[in-house]
Image (cartoon, rainbow, N blue to C red; front, side):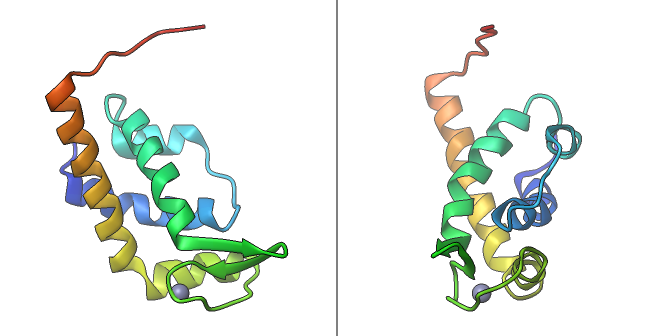
Length: 113
Ligand SMILES: [Zn+2]
């Protein structure tokens, strides 16, 4: 299992892609996070993405500094170039928070179809 700092830095480009509306294969996230952390990583991304992008009138803007409107690719590049460290810290905080919750309450993997 990768450390939260390592995992967070690897998830930054994934978060930026998803925020910009660029598709990411779930397998890619599983590859980065490992099978045991993939679902946690996905939940963390779901929490962080609304903080880093806003869509007003269908236009993409940076959720962190308000710049834009951007194209999908423009927003992706802006996020990874300008806000890489901010996004990494957010992801790392959320990962640590979720891992703490899992340790406190335990975690179950419900295999529902
Ligand atoms: Zn920005």
